[in-house]
Length: 90
Image 1 (cartoon, rainbow, N blue to C red):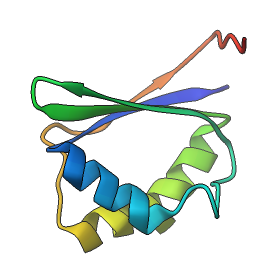
Image 2 (image 1 turned 45 degrees about the horizontal axis):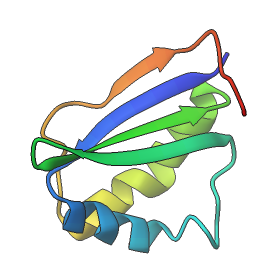
Image 3 (image 1 turned 60 degrees about the vertical axis):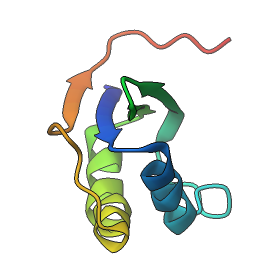
Image 4 (image 1 turned 90 degrees about the vertical axis):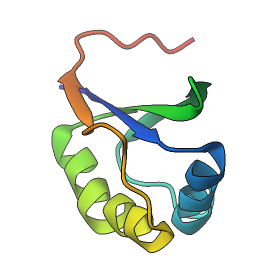
């Protein structure tokens, strides 16, 4: 079943720094269905949809966690993981 990750970054600049390290365009992670980011109250809210929890866990453990540590950021709130029962692809 697909899963949704919601996580925050303290600023747009820190989000962009993590994205630069990840280089998703050149090396897309297995299982990523959709990635969005928007500014909310001065922070960046990121929402991803993943094919499986295992795909998300692998990405978090092997790439995202390391990229965040390299840039030196911590989310202001713990990441939230949810199963989703419906995905619409337009």
